[in-house]
Length: 310
Image (cartoon, rainbow, N blue to C red; front, side, top):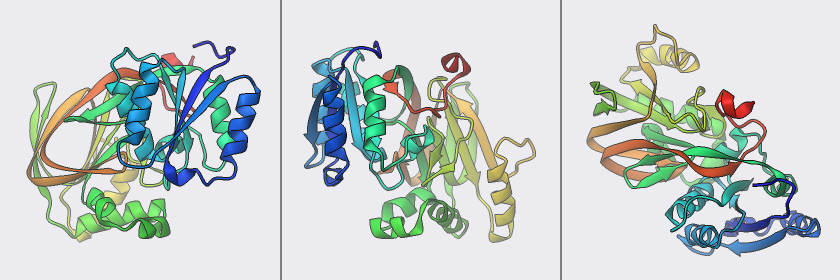
């Protein structure tokens, strides 16, 4: 996609974001620059995916997900479901509570004109998409007791807690719970058992409002970064926090960090996952990477492989 040409842009705006007084002037300014900008506003579940699929099938140049991580996830899923090869690019205007994916690539909430200008002028880079069973994730899937906190905490309390405290709450909750007995099977044929408290599978790096759960993840390396926190007792809580700050240390006893293209997970009881913030409950999960599945207009801090940064 030539960054100098005028683009056909379609915004898929989460219904909660339309009240932003900065959004309409931003759209008008981009239109004045000669770009064709169309707007679709979501009203009910499934709208974002449907609007995105329609845009991809019409070969719109750029679909802009104006919302939080869940909106980005739904728009990406809609684009992948379209009956055409991926040619339409995806971009983001962050409007959610955490906006972990957008924040992780340097796009901050509160400046829709800056984000929309990037969508109109930026260069698209194909990125990987994570998949678990029949669901996708663009950024991070978390699992275990942290995900249970996410699924069961009212939105107002999530906002009041903030990102860092909210993540810590998940760890503290996990320290008081019985672990999930899980069987992992890797693509390399290596199987192992784990008493799992918390886990994260990253295509991107951060979740929970800014915490880098998978700090070595890159969006186009064809790998998933997997972090598992194993069973502990309260007396070992300090050690676990230290290992979480040093994820790749060879001396770690309670936290493991791996990079793999795929793996399967069988849990002894239903395991709560959070896929880009959206809840998903099951006992068996097949994780894989869809390599370079969607062209994405990324922010200036997006974690990419060295080849793409040059």
